[in-house]
Image 1: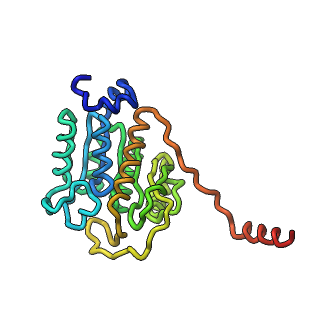
Image 2 (image 1 turned 135 degrees about the vertical axis):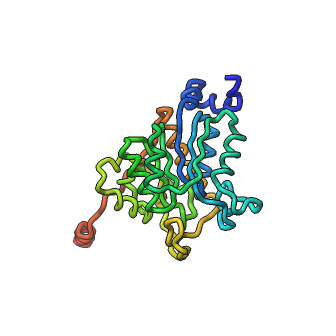
Length: 266
């Protein structure tokens, strides 16, 4: 492990065999914003041997409060290129493929001709997100997908479940609705928050990049989402257990009324 001495602390946790296993894996990260930039770095630092990163956007001043590539000195520079330099500085031996492009259906099909070991969906716009997820499902590839990180403050409210069992997340609801006709949508692992969104932080946008609106964000919350997404990927690749949040049973209004009547009658 001479070339992998920088991973010695990780090896104490997952063993040399775990590091060697990660070295053989190829992970796709789509979206390098507040969630994806941190997720990509965490996967790189874990020792994964091959990565493909995808993002067609450039750094904007409004990105600096939460996105890893965003500095006051690189406004207008492609996020994918900044992350290329950063990831290779962490691991010069990383086999890295960089796609500086927005995700159209055609581009998505081209990218997924490669057989990835895991896909991390860190897109924050509904249409490209659904394009990636539906195309990946057709190829039966393992996926973890980040849901809405905007309008929230508490990282302890993050959970992991299957997409079809997400709750208390409007963004996830939109994604579920778009994918409901796909039988295997329940195989997508989703990282979401059960915290109620702060609706007063919503702003309308110019509609560019498939986004008509956006919620306010705080520095650490998207990074926390990225960390959980990366943890799902690494644990699944190594065969470690990932705890799955169970969706609470829905209680009908009729049941509530009956319970109240029963209590009053006692």
